[in-house]
Length: 200
Image (cartoon, rainbow, N blue to C red; front, top):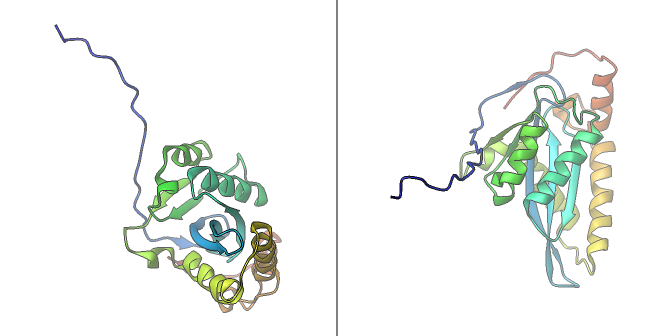
């Protein structure tokens, strides 16, 4: 009689819009985004996904691949957790992204839930809410990619690796007491005291 219907499993989805944060330590707020990298030699477009810690300005992890999908977002997030030695021990971490398909995919949402990461997304057409990672990608474009003609994927990957290493270990930032991201992060881990609080 049409009374009984096949039961379908409901997929848990959520959409948490970003809110203002007062960040006073590392691993409280990360921002993640993806940018294009053209490989001229193969006429392919690669996708660079990066995560920055808003407090210490470190590029915690990045991934260059030929697909901007949920697997890439998942891969770079897991790498960041391992790099910060908090895999399986996340406490109060918020990860902010835009509304790209890789970030709204069920596979990525499932990872955030599993790792106890609060995933929040910025409003559409509002990149200023993701300002730190947007600024980093702008620097990377101007200082690393513009004027370069990559013949192979490996060449692009090597160039980006050198840039990220220099950004983390040599580039000083006025917002973190004119220190490099690595230096500032290591000082915080050694119980270095300051009153820096970042509102984002």
